[in-house]
Length: 213
Length: 213
Image (cartoon, rainbow over all chains, first blue to last red; front, side, top):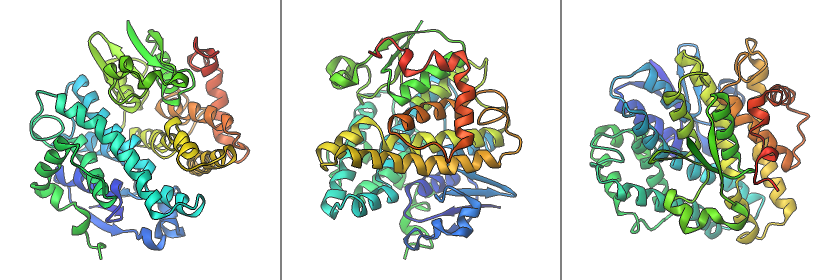
C-alpha cells in the first residue's frame, strides 16, 4: 500500500488526499508534524531532502511535489481520470490548477509566513492582509473564468470533480482560515459546496485527519 | 502561427520561449511591457483576465499559465518530447520543474516584490535577501538531488534537454539578477552552461528579445 507523508492542515497534502480518494486508491497515513518542525528533521529529510510535505512512497519509490505526484497518479492509475481527454480541455483544467498551485498557494505557505513574522517583523494583521491579497487576486481571476464558462456543470470543469477541484478546495479551506470574505466569489463557493457533498472530499478534509488535534 | 504574449525578463515567458524552441515551433513575439503595467491594461486583460504573462494564442484559443501551456505543447506537438516516457521518470522530471515553478519562482516575481517594497516598506537589500532566501533553499535541494543522480548526463535528466531544464535556466538567470552566489550549486551551474551552448536556449534568453532595451 502507498504511504502518504503529510500534515492535516497542509494545502498540498490536502490536495493529494483528495486526488487519491477520487481515484479510489487507499493509502497509509503518515503524519509529519509541521508544528514541531518534524519536516526539517533528519528522518524526514532522508526521505525528501527538500523537507516539504507531501511525499508519496510506493515500494522503494519516493515521489515529491504535489503537481508531479498528481500527474503520476493520473498516468499510473488512469481509472477515474482527473483530467479530460482533449488537449485543449486538459490545458484549461491544468491552467486553473496552476493558478491556485503557483499563483496563490506557494506565497501563503508556512515558511513564507514565518519569514514575514520573524525576518520582516509583520504582525498577524499584516500576515493576514498578505494572504488575503494573493488569495483574492487569484480567486477574482478564477471566479471570472468559471462564471464565463457556459458549459460548466457543478464543478470547475463539467459535471465530474477533477484536477482543478483538487487544487481549489484546499485553497478555499485556507481562505477561510485567513478570514477572506468569499462573497465576491459565488461560483467558487458553489463548487466548494458541491465538492463537500462528496465522500472523496469530506474524507480528505483537514479536520477529518488523525493528526488534527 | 502561434502568438506568444510575453515580456523579455519574465521567467515564465522565458520558460515558454525555450519550450517552443526545443520543439522547433516558430511563433510571433508579442511584447507586453510589464514596466509600464501593460499587463494590467484592458487590452491584455481581455486576453488574459488574470493579467499575467505569458499567454499563448493559437487561432481563437488563448492558453494561460506556463505549466499548463507546456503540458499542452507536449501533448499537441509530441515531437522532440520534453518529458521521458516512463511515468516514474516523468514524475522525477516534473518534480524538479515544480520545485522551481512552485517553490521558487512565484515567491520572487514582480507583484510580490512590489508588495514588499510598497506595502511592507522593504528596501532593496531586504528585497534581495528575500529573493536569495527562496532561490537558495530551492537550489540547495535541487543541487543535492541532481548531484545524487548517477545516471544523469549533461542536463537535469539524461543527455537531452527537457522540462526541468526549461524551468531551471530562467531561474538561474533570475538568481544572477538577484546576485545569488552560485558557488554552492556546481551541478546547476554546469547544467545551465550546457544549455547555454544550445541554440534553443540562447535564442530564448532575455537579452536576445526585441523588447530587451
